[in-house]
Length: 387
Ligand code: PMP
Ligand code: GLN
Figure 1 (tube, rainbow, N blue to C red):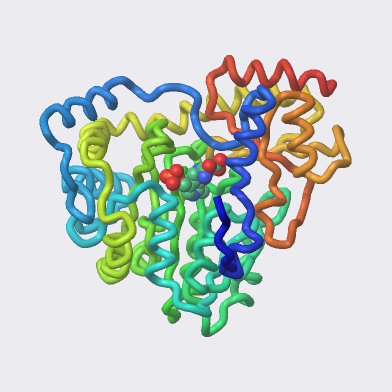
Figure 2: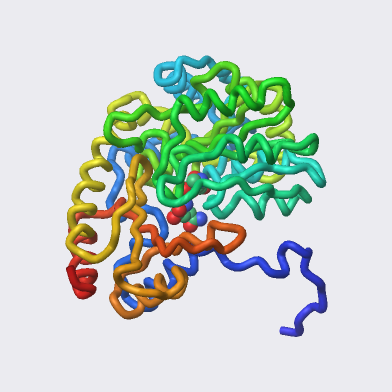
């Protein structure tokens, strides 16, 4: 086909394909065990699928309301009140989205004006900065520093200017597995007091927090909740990343702006799945049991990795385990991840891609949301690296 002679938008000219797609494809091409992109390789419960099917057969197949099915928004409101003690209005403060990615993108598109600054923390989840740049905003980078990946609130304070419109936080944190504490949350509340800065809180791993730690949700602090949009994803919680359904909650004024954009880029999300999720959420053990379920997998996988030369970092939440590889190789992390995939047969994610300055601490990310057989197959290959 004859190619059109057009010029890319500046920020798209140099944009690469997301590392998750790159590494999953390489894993498939090489027949590697894929511990790169984050998704479970086990099934959700049949009850969830039965419910979708039942709602389809019952004729619930037409557009849901713009904000999402009331049944699902009601269930979400009840969960948030039970867990975080906050009341969100079902009609004006909760919206169902096509996954967390869309919620994040739409929130940024609705609130960030051209030349506004948005503070993000490196290593930063890869969808935030492209979204900011697509709407003409400017990402300003704070840092979570290796090896504990804790925020430096003095650094954040120094980055705030009159142009700061938003700060994006992510806890539990992908890719590092670190958590914000309630003390961190309080420090952020203190430094935002008296400003009009909005918080966009990505809490997609809210139920995957280990060792009895508390998830410091931004819903749970009334002062912060008044300036926050908080994002969740059913994909992580119910082992259905391919369904692409999530939620965003926040004060009515912010949500009204969010919906102005949402109505014209998504309008509304798959109806029978929303009804099925609303039913499925009625049993809280399903989300409350997730931490113990994944903690057991974390223990299993850490024991396996401990028999290899990888150096394990702490994993306090999420289904990701970071590991240093200096005892194995001097390669930069991207090359190391490719080598490990091609030559050893285990695919991982390099962390430098989440640093805007390319910082490389020689660390890679493993996803342990896998059946034990998959983790054992990876271990069998990683053992070739020695003990
Ligand atoms: N934020 C973070 C931190 C994530 O890890 C992910 C998915 N892995 C998302 C957002 C996107 O979630 P969804 O698949 O629901 O769009
Ligand atoms: N968020 C998932 C991860 O961290 C991947 C999602 C995606 O592929 N965009 O691996």
